[in-house]
Length: 214
Image (cartoon, rainbow, N blue to C red; front, side, top):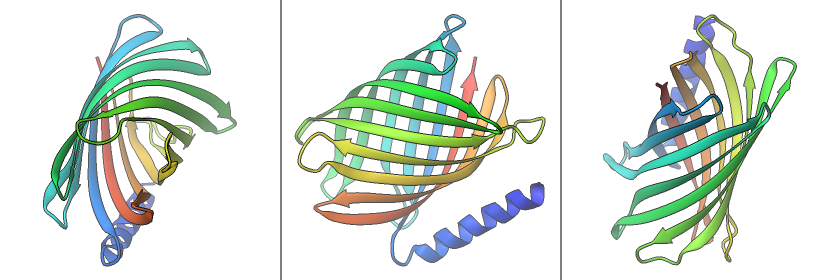
């Protein structure tokens, strides 16, 4: 099992290094902390940074807060608010984003399937405000070890409610290295296509997620 994990990491690193000639490469770090208010309700906050080794700088930062409620074993809903800053050739742009989300879960033999749908309204300082819909489908294996090792794949798309329509798509592959009651950690690779001015740009991404539950 450990040999397989090392092989996966080596293949991802080799692929991303070779791909940098033709497309961008990013590193993502995502952290979250959640607190249970009741058996089915929790509040959590998260932060994320994106780093570009080629430019040797961070190009995106955000922080948000959410209130989540599990309605039943297969559905939960949540509401949140995010403040985000992204960097382009003109400098940093700030965005504020109220959001609502619903997530459906289904267990199928040795797999767990999750489908999340999020509606958000993006408020900018200088750009046009708009609604956007984000959907993500995750497929995860059952725990393979006592510490919660699980492999997963996912797809994610973002659609603006304006003339741009679908402008961002991602494919994920990785593993959840640890899955415990109070802590979990994920390592993954992302293939991203992002449309800007009618042109699709491609990025290779390595990500690390760490979640804490108090």
